[in-house]
Length: 300
Image (tube, rainbow, N blue to C red; front, side):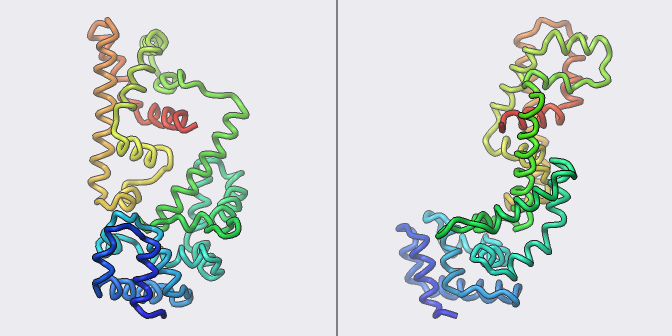
């Protein structure tokens, strides 16, 4: 292993920024880097990444505005070590990632894009993760150590499957955004069918305005949950919060959409209370489906 001071120097050279200067003078950074590298290697004893290489990789994952010692303590460095080795072409690391994750990544892609295409998609995922242009790191090198490597891989694989499904959708019959309300009432009564048809444009305006009014964080949460298929534990790992916090965030975002849709519909429609309440019940009962369709169309 390179001397600890050399590790700190390599790390800080990559990290850059004036905020690192005081850290460079401390012994804590060198000791921290050595401890992290030793722990990561102990977790993957069959994989060897030089201390300099991993220190450079760690520096590249952090913003120059971070305080290095604090930021290093937040990273999943054991998973980063594995990803770093794979990004630099270590065949043992690549095989370990495939062994640990690829079976359930294929299953996740099959749920999104269909079992028929999942084998081809897995091959494309393998190429995307581990192949790169000369002098560039492959996709696996983008894993930043926020949350687990498994959660990051699932997001990557699911988005690839969604892109494949959208490609088929564009080749076939496009489902227009106006069809959001069509999916809300598969078993609706004639009265509900009338309301759906009569107030399509008003619903479209109100619903899309309500989603647009969400914070960027809330919209991203909904994409991760409804489009990428992540559960609250996986989203919690990404945001480094407890699963109950994620559940509360998602519930709040859904309730905000419903309440704002309700407010805008009431503003625009002159329905009597009975019809208005029926329309709201229809919207609320199928909000998840409507969100799923909206977020897919918005991503295209």
